[in-house]
Length: 162
Image (cartoon, rainbow, N blue to C red; front, side, top):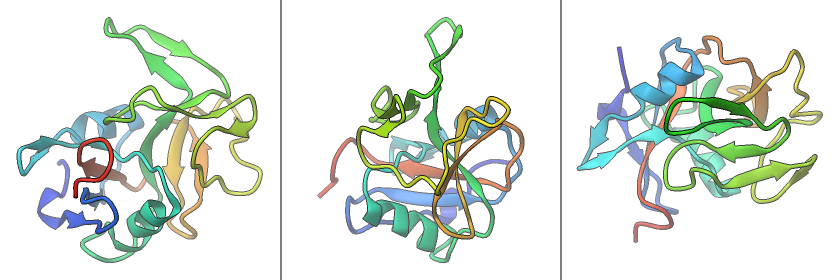
């Protein structure tokens, strides 16, 4: 399958487009599938930098309606170098996709920029290293990379588009 780019919805707060793809996929597959091109821009697993953006994704990224399933976002506390070597930085959550790639949003138990963790998260239960958005609340959770009910793709440059 792949990204539902025909359903991409623009967010007025930054001019970026978002779509929730209702497809079971591991985090790494979702990351690869999110690279679909829309309006000349390559997509990426969504990176969330404000409450307004998070609310928009939660409420409107499934063809203008709320997300139907939990879905992957572009955050992790694992990093890959250009040779594909995997490094784990337990507790150092960073955006692994898009223009925010490499930006750390949580380190040493404290948020360093916007984050929307569910109470008690991230808890690293069974070494969970990947970020998902809960469909029931819009809060975030750390999970294994295994299949989720979908993923959120974003298209846009760093910062506001207009």
